[in-house]
Length: 420
Image 1: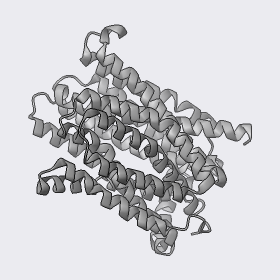
Image 2 (image 1 turned 30 degrees about the vertical axis):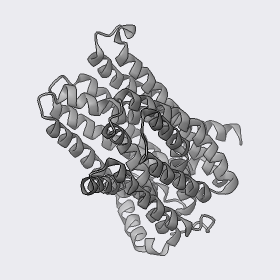
Image 3 (image 1 turned 180 degrees about the vertical axis):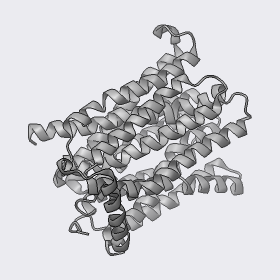
């Protein structure tokens, strides 16, 4: 690997290190709890849950609907990096703005979070698409895995620091836990902005020097999107992969989003659940790197299918958990495959999509990723109500993993890259 290419790859991968602080500290860690206990302390628990759910749903729906259009525009105008940096700038500003939201201002908190979540997801569309500009075909698995690995360790490091800030605010010359959480949001914004600088300086997309204007890009993008939708049915490997991805990534997302809730339903201590979340982040770092190597040696599809099987077995085993130590073992198992299945899905998809349309097709990829956060939790909820057992509800996720693995088996990952 040439030194110039190595520098470009690490600059690109550091963006995962940068924005993962948002997913750990803000989305998964502090915002949901702080929203209930501080910003929305005058609302009932059901009301605060409703508004938080609305914010997440609206953010996911907006980016799901516009991602393919924005991607097509970026492809036609050579705007992938520019649009990624624009969305990132908005996300950083919104994250920093959480520091300024005062107690009881729940509506302001919802709006700031909503715009931040939309911007975060929008930036990821173009970040994912840039992989085809920084890595050769034979490097895609390792480069994608490097990004996810750095994301897990970077997000985990800052989250660990933020947790210590809330446990011992006096160590950081802070008044109390509330001030520590507010400063945690600000540290995420600074971290995100700082580690985005290498992408801005060292990553250059193909065709960047021949950009079109925004209006011209929009016109060409809509035209290209129409052509793609017309021809998508002939791109068998692409849509077959997208169906498989939708199924198994729904299972992955459900495990990620519902694991803490499942642990609480089994009456496990919340401190144990936070510790398990941190442990998962740090296990996922070397595991993602290993998955990239395994994907290059044995093929991404094989490693993804093995990862799906491990996820399914983990769900089956988790239905029998008896104590908090079992939850740690579950977290360890998930950490081993979580980064790999996401990284290799990204690299495998990059091999299948048409040349010159990466942002548009990653728009579809991210669109399905957003929609694939609905059916799994819904299945768990229905199963829990009908059976009266949280343990039974986790088993229904196995259906999603099984269906995804079966469809993925029929995808030819070595098929010739199509031209549209």
